[in-house]
Length: 340
Image (cartoon, helix red, strand yellow):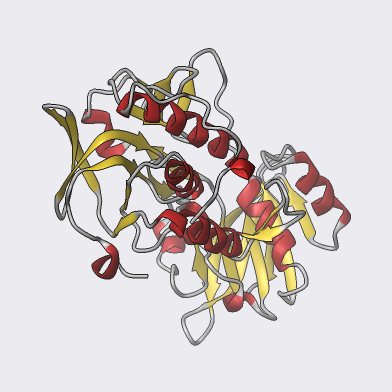
């Protein structure tokens, strides 16, 4: 799928969706159910958001109806579902500004300007970059055995792997690669994990070499210039250990930021969230938000795919009534509809 082949025209549509991650894709499908025309804008060259970029090979266990599903397969199915009503995809375009002109909202990107009657912001965690260890002597090996972002399992087949971190990404990759890599060592700087408790319990039952209160100090290359050893240390005793490795996954989290969205006149919570009410309305009339980018009033944000799906449906139903005041909020059940 390329943006050049699917951008379509620039005529006004009913709803512009900013973000082609799971929330945006489901929002596009649901908008089609409501009879709305849709344009989807995303800075990435392919749909799927974090699922496509950060962990397409990882299993997801908390999507209703799927005991487990690979992230890339979930993306494929969401794109297929969203395409039911032929939305216009504008991929590889970064949304830069939002402004009002008469009765329309104008979203300007780095390629064009698009108009619509309403807008749904489903931009995930916004602009994000992986946190780095901050040691140039280690970071210089990125591309030579050091990974901050992993998109496939293939580079780790039969490799001696070190994973650094204690969050969901670190634990999930350790579990996903345990029967793929030759050996896995996971180090974490403390004894409490940020990952899902169920995943941590599974990790503790596995044969993965887990070393708590350990950090990465240095790496040593082989004659080919690729990492072949890692120096780790116990941050309580200072004791150092040299372990053989072929690859290191640094899972130190991500810096998330709203990016250009901060200048759009939206009420925000810090640099991370857009404030919304129970209808997923922002402070701008006709502009809605859903998914990981939102902070609903009086509720702690829950960055879960299933929450994003529900918020997208809520936002679209209220957007439908904004676009057409004669429309009902509740559209009826999909089982009662005839889909083309």
